Image (cartoon, rainbow over the protein chains, first blue to last red):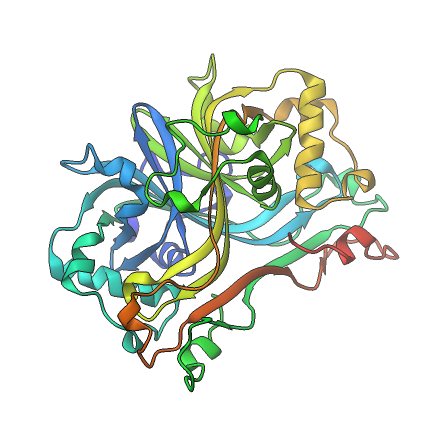
Length: 218
Length: 218
């Protein structure tokens, strides 16, 4: 994605332009930090928003097509989608109700998603899905066989039209409210991993691998 | 919401029916545990998916209309929306790439959202937004004045057509893969709150209130 091509009239952040960011580095880093995306599509005028796995490879986002199977029915030359990834970083506790907010980072990608038919490209996407969730896993597991490859549908969406939106830092209160006897600030939120829970059917003698032990959500 | 009315042909979980759940209690508890929702709407055939604040009051979901201002333009008798709330509870690490998954809880609510015009109802929704984010806050802060109330748009979506989808527990591998020398299990993920960061302009002598100190994300 070229920076100058990253935004369009449709993806411009209209309400609070100060919170908009369009450079590829910002957009890619937000995309790469999520576990799931929310994909939006339209059937008979009704929008649907479904959480699904995804990964970025270069200037493209790939998603699990099966999770959004409703939309595949009418899909000959691609389907209009919106893929959104959001991280909630903190609660913004202002002195007034009006200025309460949330610190967050989000990316919206618009465009036409298409089915990936090429087997090699599909395989690469499946690898990326796994590595996106937990880096280092792919090398240790059984890779998809031909049947599994056929049973999985993968969609590709080029990142041509995208924008990021972020909020960071302190609450912004009205001048006259700063004298109030109200605690204000930010309560940071973060995602962390708990103790790994071994599969009940885990074969004896298998120890926890480094890519799980050392994993930290981004 | 009556349980039997909670699902419709449009919200039935088609791909993996075992993961679908439609009772009101499940749906409400998932809705009540999120910080933001993703709202989907359509403009000129293009779906948009935008993260925004929300709250449930009884059988209705309210959202901040301003975050989705694009959709308000054409909005006379309501606008078709999809509101989705998703919690990622863990990474499901199987022996095969194919069976990798995520433990999650999500709710999809479909319907026509309408602008809330009644001032009292709007006020109640603003209170619910704040209390939804961090219970106990409303009593301590400055409430919205008339100007702020006018500057905020609130949308209501009745929970008539909704479904929940969940995945919990161990990976499900193919029988022949259980003998592989691969660690398998679940890596739980949870959202936690860090140390509160006081506003740089916080008035001297104000201590951290209990509703912040004792807050635990649900």
